[in-house]
Structure formats: structure tokens, C-alpha cells
Image (cartoon, rainbow, N blue to C red; front, side, top):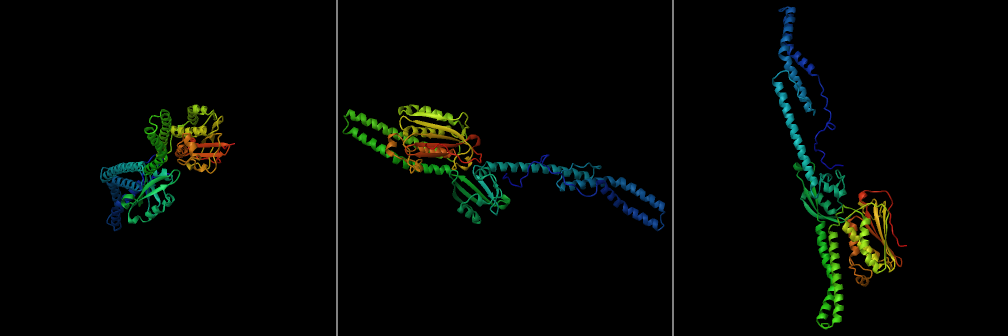
Length: 500
């Protein structure tokens, strides 16, 4: 359904131009004969009266009438026919038809009037075409505005909405009440009180990913906006708010997580400057620990920066088509040496044919790098880490609305000690660790699964975690298939990968 104004004109085409309405009334010849009879009537009446009074013979009166009729026909019939044609031409123009310019038998006033009317019609057509082009141009400009803009009538129903608004609230907006679009009491109150002047408010849409807007509500002058009375614009400030929040989080998290390694480095530096100044053995040991702490800080800062970049663009869904199997094969190849050090086998199980997913290759690499590397770290030695890939008709029930179609599921299974159920809901929180000492010893920053969670959110996907103590864990990433990223399906929700 289009949201263009109903009063806008369009170029007529042979298929869309309506048939000219029929013009009622006598024909051109009939009208001319009637006028001819009216012109002849006075002379005929006078001659008839003279004949009745005996002052003129009947035969002479008849001859006189015929002579008058002949003279009248010679003098008046052609102009009368032209005048009749002109009248019919004007009537057809008034009824919205597009008649051809009539051919005139004389070059008098009727011919000049017909020519002037034809010229006027051509100029009106040019003016209407220019107006139509201007209206379409203004509509294109309105649609191209980056902010979502909605116009309401006096009853608070949508009369116009640009492309950004249709993308934000849905395509069929015209005629809908504004309360069906924005269920935010302060905005609805500001609209009700529009007579008091415009207002600006901050507003958030929580799903599928929270977005924040500055909403500007302004009255419109009636002579400018037609039936539109209120203008509402939504300026997206999600990126600004995310940057502000990320700045605060970065300072808080960095100060908390960097305090321990920095304290260690400062302590070792003081020791090397003091008691261990000449102790070569202690110096080598301390330098090794300092190198580990410095590397930990570098990893932490890199993960924080990576998380910040992902959060900054989380509300924008990627559009590339990515071959998941190729990405996972590359990740496994890079982790083979680390797996071999613990005598862990990496195995991949995937069908011959898989649909591509809609995503960002580097970010998906980061997801599978974190999941598979964690599995290698926490699986028991001499076991296998299995990566299973499958195409499903539909993901789990908590998939975002726009991704409820075919998905590609990637399950990473380890054979570790498993995770207690009370820890699972918090695993994707920043810096949350089930065993902090063990995580730090293994070089973890506490941000890996938080990064995975935010990447999956940006890709409109879902991460599920299944784990049982003593049986290991399965981390499954569900990603919308590229060919059907926006298509729905009636298939029941599906999940794969529970520890057996």
C-alpha cells in the first residue's frame, strides 16, 4: 500500500485515462437548424400577417418566405454551425473530456474563440504536467529524508509517511491512528496538546534491538499542509546514546579489570628496583610474570574495543551473504595447534549443501573463534570438540520476528565438566566467570561470550547454551539464512545440540 497523498495527480496513460463523458443534447446540425428556424421566424410571421390581411397575395408571401429563408441560410447557417460546434467543444471541456479542436467553416469570432480555447487547454496541460512533476519530486524528497517523518490529520490519523517511517513502523500506515504506532504516553499527550505548541521528547523502541529517538512534534499551518495538521519526526540518536554508554562502561570495566594486572606490574617493578635488583633468577621469573600480565591487559583492551565497535552498529543488520562452513573451517585450521597441545581433536559435521547466512564475515569469524576456542580450553584432555552445522526450517522460539524463517544452526560441543544451571543465564554478561581464577589462568578476559551475544544480536540470530555437569556443554548459534532472512514460515521452532 502506498503512502502517497490521495490528491496527487499522475501522468495519464492510454490504460489509465478515463473515457470522455458523453455530452447530452441535440447534435450540431439539430442545434443549427433550431437557430436557423428562430432567425427565420420573425420574417415568416410578418409575411403571414400581411397575407392574412389581404395586403399580399399568398403565393407572393410564400415566395417571400422562401427568399428570406435562402438569404438567411446563406448569411447565418455557417456561423450558426460554427457557434454550435464551439458550444459543444466548450461543454466537453467543462465535463473533463479531451475533444479535438473543432473545424470552423468561417473565420469569425467562433473560430477565434475555438483557437483561444485550444491554446488555453495546451497551457493548462503543461501547467498540470509541471505541477505533477513538482509534486512527484517533492514526494521523492520527502521519501529520501533520513529521519522518519509522519503527518497526521486533526483526528490523529496518518495521512502521509515517508520511506524511513514505513521502514520503522510498517508499510501500511495511511489511515492508522497514531496510538497504534507509538505507545508512549508522553508523545500521545504532546499530540493531544498540540495547540499549545510543538515539543521534543526522547523515545525508545525496545525491539528487535533497542533504538532511541528524539521525537519532534510540530503543528502545521492548514494552507501549507492540506489535510495534514501535525508533523512528527523521529531523529535516531541510538549511535550517540550507545557511544555515551560505551564510554562510561569502558571506563568502569577497564578500571576494574586492569587494576589487578597493573598492581602486579607495579609490585614487580618495585621489587626489581629494590630487593631483587641483583637477583638474576628472580628477575627472569618476575619478567615472565610481567609479560603474562601485560599480554592479559592487551587482550582485555582489544576485547573491550571490539565489543564497543560491535555495540555501536548492533542496530544495523549486516547484508553480506556468508558461507558459514568456510568461516568455520578457517577458524578450526587456526586452532589446530592449540588443540593438539591438549591432545584434543577438532571435528566438523556438515551436509554437502548449506544456504549462506546474512552476516559480516569478520564478526562471524569472531563468534566461532570464541566458541570453538572456549570448547578447546574447557573440554577434557584426550577428547573431541565437535562442530555440527545444519540447515533448519526455523530457529528456536526466541528468534527475532524478522528472522523467523530458515536458519543455519552451528553447534559447538565439548566434553568438559559442564556448567551448573544457575550460571548459564549469566554466561554472556561482561566479565562474568564461573571460575574466575581458572578463567584468568587460561588467558580469558571475561568478554568472549559477551562479544558473541552482541554479534548474534546484530545478525538477528540467537545463541543457546545447553550444559549438564559431567557431560559437557553445547553452544549453538542460529543465524538467518540469506535467501530468506526476512521471510516467515509455518514450521515449528527447532533446536539442536543437547549434551548426551
